[in-house]
Length: 360
Image (cartoon, rainbow, N blue to C red; front, side, top):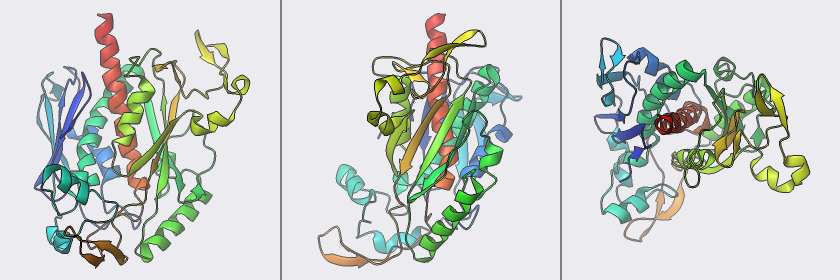
C-alpha cells in the first residue's frame, strides 16, 4: 500500500479508523527547528470530529504526542513520530456491513485488491487516516511560515449547488474562515450552507462541496518539471484525499472558455520583482511558482455512508437493502479545510527542500 508522500520531506501515515491509534512518521524535518505538540494541535482541533452539529458526533479529542525526533524543544533532524489515540471506537456499528459493501465506498475495491479489509469504519479509506497528514502538515507549515512568511488559507467555497461568493485572496484569514461553523467566510452564504447541511443530515442523507485554497508569499521557482510540476503535485496531493473528485488551479475549467488575449497574465514591476497584473495562471507557469499567490479548488463528493435504505447487493451477489449505521459526516467540506491546507503545506515543503538541495 502506498502510505508515503514526498521526496525529501517524506510523510508515512499509519492506522485505521477503529484501531488503537493513528499518526505519521515524518522524515526530512530540518534540524534545530523549535517544535512542540502545541504547534501541531490547532490544526488537529480544526479537523477533529464532533466539533459542531454539522459533523459526525464521534467524540475524539485527537490529542497529538510527539514520540521521537525532538529533544529540549528542538528537532534533531531524525524522523519525527506523531501519535494520536483513537478513544471513541465503535467497531460494532459496522457488524452488519461485514457481508455488504457500502455503495460508492471502498469496501468492495479493498476486498478485491487485498482479499481482506478493515470492515469497521473503512480502515485506511476512512477520513480518520488524514490525522497523520494534518499533523505532518502543521510541521511543514511552521517551517514555511518562519522561513518565507508563507500563509496557507482554505475555506468552503460551495456546498451542493450553493456557492460561497467572492473572496479577497490577498486578505482572507483563518480567523474569518473559522467565524462560521461551515468555514465559509461569506456569512450569508454560510447560513444557507448550514441550513442545507442540517436538512440533509435530518433526512439521513449527505451532500458534497468545494474547498478553495490560497498559498501566499511563496518564493518563485518552486516546482520540478517535467513530471513533478507544482500544480501536478498539488493535484496529486488533493486527489489523494478521501472523497476528493476534482481539482482545478487558477482559472481552471473556466479558462478553457476564454480567449488567450484575455487569459494571459501581463507582467509588471512589483516591489522590486516581476509580477503579474492578473493571476489566471494560479501562481504557476510551466509547473513553476512565479511569486504570485497559488490558488486552487478541490471538489468533494457527498460522503458515501448514508443511513437511508439503499437497494444493493452483498459480497455474494444476493440482493439486499442496506441501512448503514455508525457516525458519519453529512458533509465533509467543513472538516476538509485544514486537511487541504496541510496537503498544500506538504507539497510546498518538499519542493522547498528540493530547491535548496539543488542550489547547495
